[in-house]
Image (cartoon, rainbow, N blue to C red; front, side, top):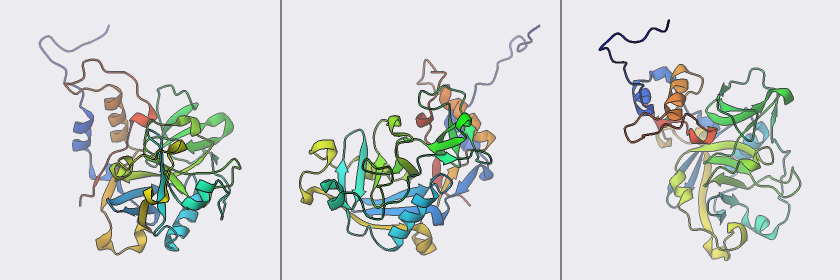
Length: 285
């Protein structure tokens, strides 16, 4: 026999995603690690990037080294392709189609999933056997191949390359459009933007092929890229990210899968990994 609520008794409505976050505990959140956080400074302000050493340690070490060498200071963003990517770094090299210097070995996937935190989604995905989240990053994995990788959601940070897998080294791109998941496991993803996406997504679009700026003077200046740990504490942004290994995060996923806000008349009953931007907020003491 199925037992339901007693006559006249109403079941409490399921909480919305906003209500779940409001009720969250302090230990449901984690601060950004300043050693694995980059500040990309543009004329419009700061873009904050969290790096993913668990998936691409060599790429993370490489971009931190370049930042500490002030390599990106006075470089440019030279490609803005609508509904696709913003790309910057060593413009002259990429525009001429030459292989980049300082090429590093591609890290398209991480071998070995044992011990890697992973909060999986039950929803089917067309690009991977399993999708979910690892340490706050949208990720996928293939248990049969014992491999995991980061996926190309909005805000993902990747390393451009030529045809050779190991040809990337100094440039970077950020996804600013519909998730180009066909790039998964073909390009190294090694971070994500956690704040300031509007500063990238609103840049003028390039009019040459693939969104490159047709004239050098159209390129958007990069003022600097710095590792947050290298700045005085007073100059750092105090952000924290919802932990993706908690019951609160799993409840939040369900609230996004079946939206309960009054505006929604038909909950989808489905969610895709790139429809779940992990919440970020100002750090609370």
